[in-house]
Image (cartoon, rainbow over all chains, first blue to last red; front, side, top):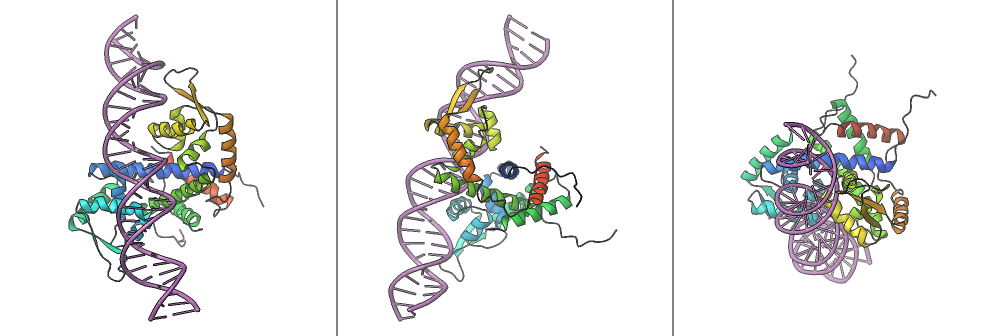
Length: 142
Length: 142
DNA sequence: TTAGAACTATGCAAGCTCAAAATATTCTCG
DNA sequence: CGAGAATATTTTGAGCTTGCATAGTTCTAA
């Protein structure tokens, strides 16, 4: 009914640019912290997503990347002795990724480092919840 | 005073994952459209951001990447005859990027293609405005 | 049961991205 | 003015990412 001060619609193209810009900032943040522990950004992302044993495909999905990319990154982490590729208990096609003890403690250090100076610190908790809702809805439609 | 159904706070880490996931989806969308015109995703992004003559640095900033990356991508577009590197009118250090006529029409086709099936179509105009506000605020703090 | 579809992981080629170093130019201040 | 700091671009090397092809395994339905 009323006509509140309605901000003009933004071009979707620019909105995509904003999303990308923020993602880029987040990636930079991860990269910056990762190097202080001797990791690359991709390795740190993989380590961060290793919340427990999982398959390559599951990890790839958490990392929002292709499975072949996960293979590449896990190769590196395995060479560093941080992750092991074990046989999957029920599916012989799949591998079961498991953190080694060193991998576990490396992950702990990393998470602690990543929690500092969040790139989202500019938003209040309420705003973060609002952002969460919008992003979930946007992502939800495949 | 009242206690509205307050959704639980989400971990910042997961919120970052959501941002990254949406950015990934947007990137996939661009890639998909780009190949139908014979471009790679990076080339399409550069073309999309070429709203007018600009320097390498300016383009890199619009693309949210390093200048050396812009050099790489512009090399390709220049070889295809879509962009020209001209002398900058006032700064001899800088290059002035200009679209050729073919570059201009390629860009037109691309924009038209990118406007179809937006990855943000799951959000209403109001929600898009809300998202814009949140993202701008989040990005605003360096 | 079994043939075929679907799925998991990997190897590979091509292309993208970052970081650091190098070059050329411009800016700043004593 | 002139030296040193700052800026614009490019080169190079290392690592990341995608898409496709392949081999092995599981699922599905006739």
